[in-house]
Length: 535
Image (tube, rainbow, N blue to C red; front, side, top):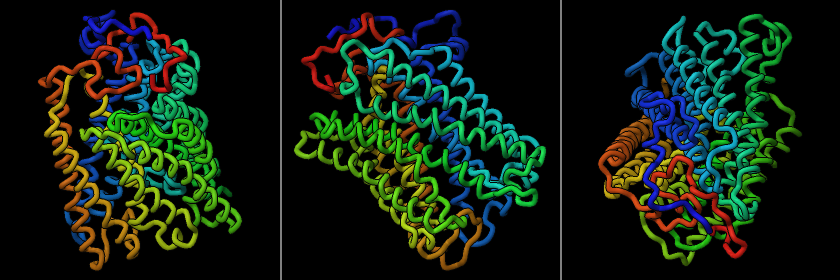
């Protein structure tokens, strides 16, 4: 295989181009810089969202008012949800690691449409600013929850329109990213890199891109209809005018359940890269993992109704949605089986990325199994809209995406920044974060089964013990988060210089210097027939 010169001295961090300083970043079409722009933007919003979540847990430490009233609590959990879902979790791994690494992993010099890629980031920033406008100005902070459920979304007197339009703009950013990735993977693969030689992370980005392209327009249209309902009273969702508020739920979840897989598929892809590297053996069941990825992407479109068992749908619809929900668990279980099988009899190197990957499997299994509780009709009716749903949601979305994101940043950190982080503090941050996460969210399963409703700023005395433990867990988790972020920021400036391939990875990004040069390759690599799937 032909690869770039390891002694290349000019890297993308030093490249000036037409502009310099901050303008050299804002107007750069280099996919690596755009990936870093997403990383920095998402990291800032994550810190904001995390501390809003901490404020909510402080309010719930005891019955009655502690630090905020009911209206402020409603606004806080709305803002927390909008930031975490639309600004962090959905763009997260694809926007950061997909942008930075995917072209290198397939042997390309950039994405197919570099200017469109930059436009995607600009749209992301525009959407964030629009939503922040809704939070800082106007008659009041939106208090509908991140789902913007009708009829409240067009009846509330709060400043909702900028937030809805901001989410609409963020959707366009997601669509353009998905389109760019699809064309790049189809058209710019290195010679000899056939479909069954693609890294699994690229496969998950491919499945995610199809979801972004096909599902996101649905929520865009839905948000436009809410805006028209709010401004002109057109009567699509308003029952007073002959509309149907349940129709909003259908349209919202037709997008938002596939959006869960926009979040989790790239996370699974990152784990599928980390585990074989640290098990020091090839991935078990490569083709099965590809098939399961595409199966999740496809079946994910068919299960939106399990969010709506209590909304009045027919018994027949409930049965089919429940059955399909159990079907979508099968490809996820295949992935877990293959990850564990990869580790079996492997010569495992214990390092920070592997710890994050192993803990991802643990929390994802809990989230997946409790998802089956919610997918079953009888148990769903009992725990619907309780703290049990909050626990499940965070084990899947925050546990799945969050743990894999931290695993990915620790795995690819040497390649992205050309520096090594302090492994001792990285491991301390991981264990503190893991303990805090489990302490924060596990009691919510118990509280939900006891009947504590979600989204309430107050609760009965009988739920006090579980909420104290949960709030204590939030303090531990935030402590771990501070350790992790501090270590990564400090190491980017003062860490030891990283080699080309510190982990012994087999995919193409480990064949270029750390950090990679401007156009990745002096010569596009050629993948020979004698080489294995992972080269």
